[in-house]
Image 1 (cartoon, helix red, strand yellow):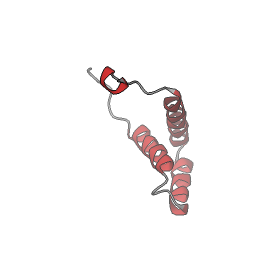
Image 2 (cartoon, helix red, strand yellow):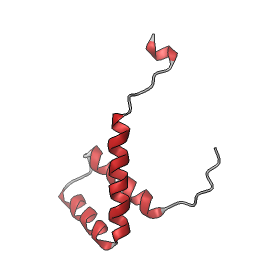
Image 3 (tube, helix red, strand yellow):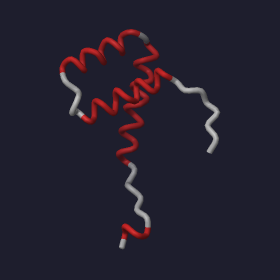
Image 4 (cartoon, helix red, strand yellow):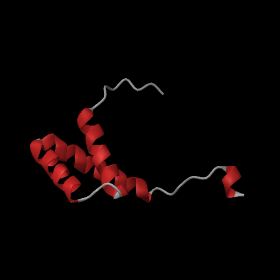
Length: 72
């Protein structure tokens, strides 16, 4: 697969926030405050964060696929 799309640092940061938030191990009050500041800094941040949240939710609805070896 050839991906000719340039990297999007806002999307990358939004996705990192979503993953970090759901891992919860490193998501404390200071993290929530940092996220709130990042979201408030630019409307594009909120847009990409919301998009990343939807993707996270949708990916949880997809059942895992198993190859033939693990199904036995």
